[in-house]
Amino acid sequence: MPLMAGVLIYAAITFTAQSNDLYILNLEIKQLEQKIAREEEEKRRLLEERDEISSDESIEKIAREKLGMVKDGERVFVDTNK
Image (cartoon, rainbow, N blue to C red; front, side):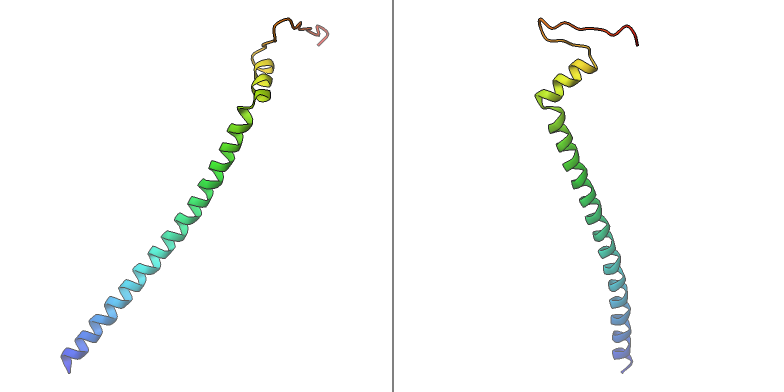
């Protein structure tokens, strides 16, 4: 009889410890799934931004506005009143 009680106590302690470990692991899984979702959203946003920036119109706009470039034969007029 004492052996049976010892086995039951051991089983109860082991079960409780494993239940706690399982709970902690499930929390970690949930946190990682949330992080994955955030990272996937960031990836989607960056890919969209890359596609927008790499369009011919966007490249031309950057070249004109930030680099002061002009097409062959174009004339640039500068407003000296500003």
